[in-house]
Structures are given as structure tokens and as C-alpha cells.
Amino acid sequence: MLSPQILTQGTNSALLEDGRLVITTTSARTVIPLAAVRDVRLEPEHETSLKVVLTDEAVYWIKGGNPTATGVFLTALTTALPEVRDPAGSALVTVEGDPGAIPWPKVLAWGGGFVAAYTAYVWWTAVAHGGAMAVLAFIAGFGTLFGLACVFGIASDLRDRWILRRRGITVRATEEFYPNGKRSQYYKFTDLNGNEHSQRGRNNLFPHITVVYDPQAPGRHIHRLWLPIVITRYFFGSLAALGVLALGLWGVLAPYL
Image (cartoon, rainbow, N blue to C red; front, side, top):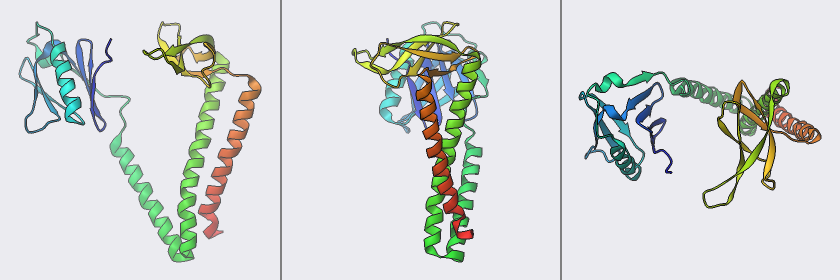
């Protein structure tokens, strides 16, 4: 069975599922039943633009990243169109806000603000304390960000482990294989609702591993390991993360101490 086709350009995507076309942008998710589509055309002036015309003449546009992917998606979408179409057209289309969409305007605004503040800080350090201190502050800023990311990552993992310790369900996961028979790095398990999930294994030497997952949010799951290994890993990981963060903060603040 072929995997569903996805046509992407930047943060926008179009997914061809069974019986419907799902167009996702940074702000909305549009679901178009294939029965509402009259035809799909490749625009001559744009090799990566598809024009989706509905049965009531409403038009939607899909943009792809390259001509090859666009052509393959066009063929797959045209082949999937049913013989009998619904004249209701756009009345069958549903548009909703995408809760998983990345708010790019806010991300870019915060990113631009951070870059401006960071540039001003390095410039001021160079003016007030010389070029050597400016270089130190520049490098230390990245170290601080990396240390913060590591600390937050460890804190998030520890929170998940605390939640799973309180209400987690333990199951046995079975190794996964690629279609060519090669063993993958993942193990699969099924939750109480019959949904299948994958857990990355620390090694793939064994046919089964033990996984703990949250029945209230099955996407939260971990590979259950021997407690001394977990303690050792988080102890030294925390020391390393805090050390990098401390060094980064020292470098940032050194010119002013």
C-alpha cells in the first residue's frame, strides 16, 4: 500500500487522504471531499502550482516545492477523483483553525526582537569593554541558549516520568521492521483504544521492550529502564546542562562583573 501523498511548500501542505484533500496553511486547515472536486489543473506559467476547481466553480490553489513532486501529486489526485461528483461543491468544504499550526508572525517577531537585542548587547559590549569581551559575549550567548534548552528538555522529561509514575500503564512493545525486512530502531505498541504508537528503543538487540504510556495522553510514553540507569543518566545529564548554562551566563555577564 502506497503512503498518502503530501505536497509541501514552506509551512503549507496538501495531503491526499482516502476520499478527501486536506490543505493546511499557517492559519487554517481546509478539508475538501474529492467528490466536490471537478478537476485539477497544472498552471502553465507556474510549474509548481495546482488549480483545484470544485463542482460549483470555486477555486483553491496548491503550491508545491518542485515540479516533480507537483506532477506526481497531480497524477495521484486526478486518479483518486471519483466518477460521481457532488454539485454542492464548496458547500461540502470545511475550514477550521489549525491548532497545531506554528504562529509564524509571532515567531518571526520574537525572533527579530531577540536578534536585535542580542546584536545591541554585543555592540555595546564591544564599545564599552573592547573586542575581546564582545567575542566572549557573542559565543557565551549561544552557550546560554543551548544550556537553557538542555535544562528545559531534562525538566520536561522528568515531568513526563513523574506523570507516568502516577498513572502510567506498562505494556510490551514489539520491534518494527522496514518493508525490506531490515530491523528499525523503533518498537510498536497498541494503547487501550486500539491506536498504534512507536517508541524509539535505546538499542534494537531485543525483539521486545517494556514501554510505559499515559492512558490520558498516549502520545506521552517512555522506554522503561532499570532505575539506577535512569538516575545515573539524569544526574550526569543535569550536571552537564547546568554546567553549560553556568558557563554561558558567566560569559554573558563577565564584562559587567
